[in-house]
Image (tube, rainbow, N blue to C red):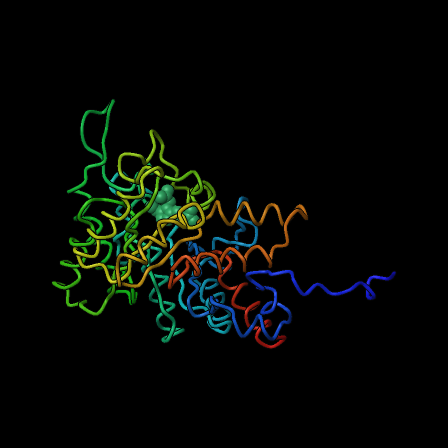
Length: 343
Ligand code: PBG
């Protein structure tokens, strides 16, 4: 008896025939619940002083510290792929205790924003607002207290974050993204922007930002690792999810236009919980260590770069993120375009 001669079973009852709708590419396409789009992706970029500089970041293959001229060229290419926005981080040459480079009108981020605004008027520009890239000690705020046991001074830092936000708004940023995890930072920034007549500039709040080990490559890229101690007195304990919801709600009450969960893959539960709880747009940040892990495994041939990038981004969207910040943004936008053409 061959396989095909075998009598068919009519008595077998299978409750769910899920395979019926997975049989062909056409059916799968028709029924896909989550459709990733280039327009929801945000590409983080590092900008540094100089000219003609494309300095590859060791722990983030394929990512570069760019001088302003190279940044403009990169953003032209990115805009053509259809990515939704860019998120800028400045890597200054000089640092000091207060991080004064963060709010200097001729600071590296301010110069980059001005050049981009002029070259690409339609580009959505998001500027990071934090001090850690600009402080000599690498903390996200200014220090106070005894020299042998300094602490980050929350309220004095607020003033400096507000100044930084106003200066990047003046340079032409559409959105400011405070990532310092100081209490009250969204309210302080909103008030300062409004007083300076930047009512139209939006705030993307890093609402629930864990003190995550996945930020390592970023700190190498930005030279922003803390010189002593760690960030656990201001960034959240990764063990806490209910507290994350309180942070999300607090930032909305303070005037955040979008709230972000960070990192993304280790916190998909929080993306989903925030989605179910609030109606403001939700962003998730697939951070440097998430990128580095996937990129490194792909370099070794252990994972398929394109497949894992698109699967991880789709999972972040499925969890409820409207906007995804990812180092794969430009590449993923190009892949999505190819898929749309290939079917
Ligand atoms: C600055 C900041 C960090 C990241 C975004 N903004 C670093 C940190 O908190 O140490 C991390 C992003 C990434 O890892 O890709 N406060």
